Length: 241
Image 1 (cartoon, rainbow, N blue to C red):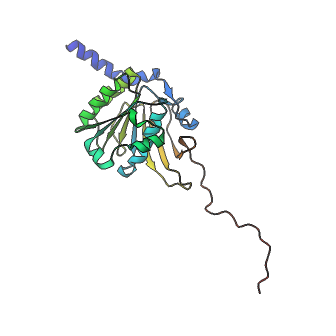
Image 2 (cartoon, one colour; image 1 turned 60 degrees about the horizontal axis):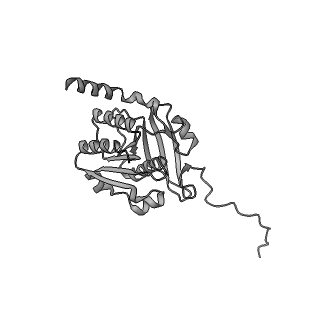
Image 3 (cartoon, helix red, strand yellow; image 1 turned 180 degrees about the horizontal axis):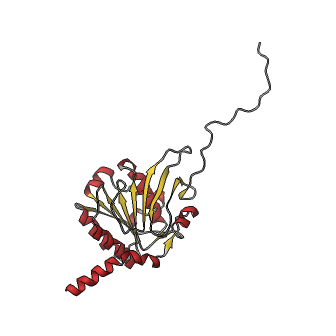
């Protein structure tokens, strides 16, 4: 029994080093994919934090954009703390359809305590039919051992794992990347968000302004703001009576 426990702990300590074997999935934006080493590590844990609770929908949209790139019709587990569901609601079926995701492939799970959420994430990651697992939680630190277990489960199963957090965390993590995402004003009318890569175990960090494109069905880099009004056309001088 003790030998088995030692072997398990030894495996957990090696979890962050498995990232060298990760396959990647393109986010569809060259600047971001190059920063990540050809894209998001698929068999890995990533953290996406909102700049504040009011910006959680923007962070959730970014998380779903990552999930959407994982498979043509991804099978998603969305696991939330009870209080997170009470304060932020649940993903809306019509919204998922507009986003290009099938609501019938979404499994919603609620957890009373954070330890239950992390346990449910680990179990979902080990399900062969799962494409991605999102764990939504409110503010507060996470047990380091539990996070390492999630990293190991994602690496072993080949499944994408995302921790969606209500505000930027300060705790240590074995996640391959950590993002801070918030809504930002738009001049085009399309939803925009500011995505900042604050930790990247595979390379440098960076920040981008992204805009949702209905025609492309994904986020694109936002263009420069256009003038609010076009310059007046040249008109011939008219004599004033």
